[in-house]
Amino acid sequence: MKKFFISYSRDDKHWAYELWRALRDRMHLDVWIDLKLLPATDWWLSIVESIEECDCFIIVLTPKSGESIY
Image (cartoon, rainbow, N blue to C red; front, side, top):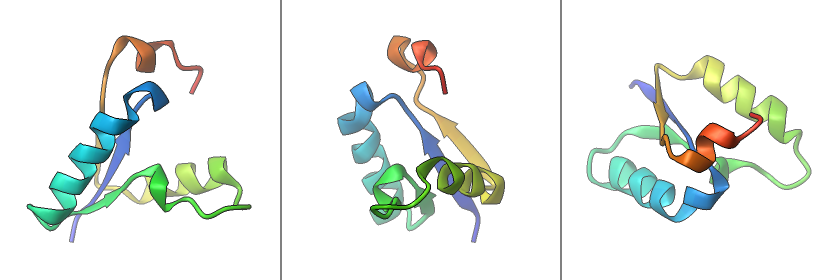
């Protein structure tokens, strides 16, 4: 199964979470979003590892995401 990664601005999290749920529930895709981060983990390392493992990188491109330092 192909793995997907969703990148988005925190300001757009409600829309991004709806996209994630739709891809997961309706299309049965394996989609990573930061809701899967566990407390006390190295969040940046977890994100980088998930990006490296993904087959498809989905960017929710908005003005806020373009302003992000990440």
